[in-house]
Image (tube, rainbow, N blue to C red; front, side):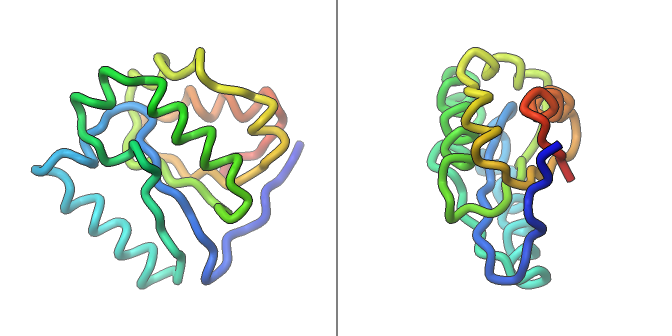
Length: 132
């Protein structure tokens, strides 16, 4: 098993939306901002939203490849030390054709998940990564 490094104050982390794009919808955006602010103020992390993660429900539903692109780019970026999923859901299945497991294995990064995130967790087991 490959165990990613723990997060430290000052580390850069990415937020992604693997399933629903609700975090970018106007009526729910305040929840994203509250969570981002807590990561910054309580844990001292530098939080960046991946380019597609806040484009809203309609766009992310129509573009599963954009969701997967954010996921893969977060793993590829050596400055990103952790990945937080904005929201889970069953639509994560539609990103599977766009996931490169070799990229994940070569770039271990803590993936912080909640809700219905069984699919990405299962993906991490194939390249032998540990999710926290």
